[in-house]
Image 1 (cartoon, rainbow, N blue to C red):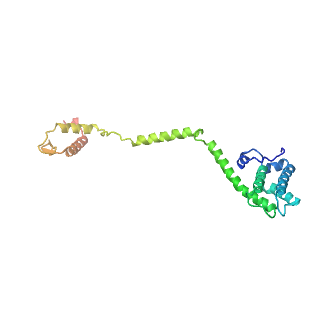
Image 2: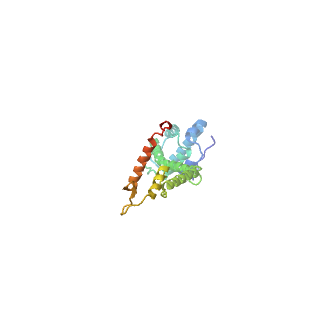
Image 3: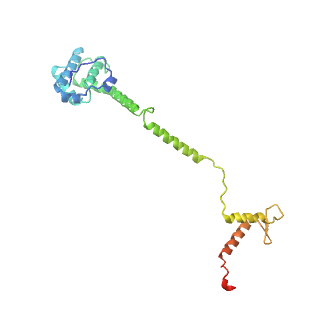
Length: 224
């Protein structure tokens, strides 16, 4: 752990996105130096206040220990900014006394600001990672959507009417019908075996006749 120094110009957004180590890492590398830096911050803050009951040396030492133990997720820059904001009255007016409970109240107030900055940084990171313009999946997604659209349009196309394909039997019946003599009258009737039939009746009659013919046994050569 290198020597840490306070940078008063740092904003909460810069602290959140910065590369400085959290207290959890710093206490593993050099806990004595971490504690010394915390005590220095608390002493400077305590001395800057004009209150009737400032923190004693023991209270400052205990407060530093509690921050190292319970505030492991923060950075020293977070603690420094918290105390600067408290000194400027952003967390309420300090009048009569200052102790460890007040320091933790300031930290909790600052944590609301810090949480908003953390969420903002996370959203920016996700937006950058999945940028519509840059993400390689965008081209694939666009292509899939375009193909789905084309397929849907094709399914919706109104296809021209195509008459059903007729088999040979139907073709023969129609050909026969065209050759029959038409009867007189508004309805298209044709004469077949001395009966006037509509096409549907004629077609049914011819199918039955052809079917019946197909079941007749072939003439035997022995019958002659």
